[in-house]
Length: 74
Image (tube, rainbow, N blue to C red; front, top):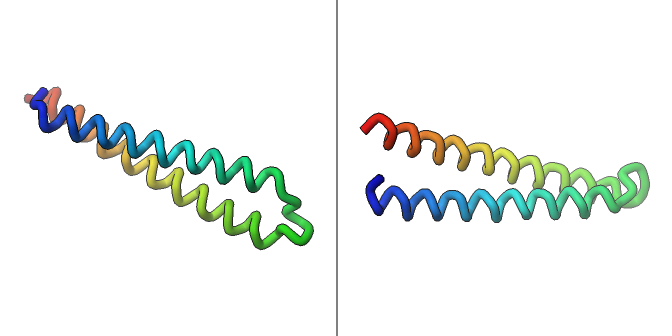
């Protein structure tokens, strides 16, 4: 595997871990709130934010897979 691809993979894996940790943190914060009480709006926003982060994590995972697959074909 070319060194540039390895460095790029390391960066992508690091970004994916950061995004996943933040999504988990937001979910924990959301779960500590009362979704049917005065925290309903905050719960909604936290849910949207965590979903967006999980989607980004999935995109990063796809990019990582594409790079690995391309390198296997070489």
